[in-house]
Length: 117
Length: 115
Image (tube, rainbow over all chains, first blue to last red):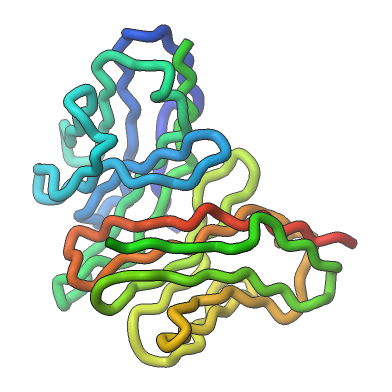
C-alpha cells in the first residue's frame, strides 16, 4: 500500500540554524500539507500546497517557514532560523482529488521529531 | 471558525468490552469528519471518515462512527475492544466550503485497553 515517507525521523539542531524536513507524498496525490504537534498538544495545521504554490497557511507559518516541491516527488519544509519553540513533531500529509474536484482523505507520514537546543 | 472537542483525555476499557471515544464539532457549513489513530512514535493512521450519506460509517480494524447532525457529534465506537487498540485517537474536521482541506484536530483521547 502506498504511503507517505519522511526523512529524517529525528533531527537535533542548534537555535538559529536552518533545517529542511523532507517528505515524499503518495505518488498520484496533488495536495500536500505540513502539520506539527508540540509534545503533549494537539496536531496543528501549518500549510497546504497545491499546483506548486501555497494555498493556505496558518498564523504559525511565518516568514521563517517555507515549502517547496523541488522535483516531482519531494515536498520540503524549511525553517530558516530555528527557535526553541519550533521543537515538535512535524507531519507531512498528502491527498488525492476526487472526480468532483474535492479532496480525498489526507494520509500522514510517520513524522520528523525536531529538537531545537 | 471550525473546532473539535474531545471531552475525555483518557478512556479506560477492559478487553472485550465496547469502546466509545467521543467527539463533537463546530463548523460553518457541512462537515467532513475524520478519525485518526496514533500509536507510540508513529504517524497518524486514517481510520474512517464521514462525507455524506449513511450516518453510520465503518472503517478499519472494526471501528465505526456515527454522525449525529443535531448533536454535532461523531463518536468513534468498537463493539469489542482489543489490547492492541490502546493508542491515541484524534477526531478531525474540515468544512466543505473550504476547498484547501485544512484539518482541525481535537486534543486527542488516550485509549487504554486492559487485558
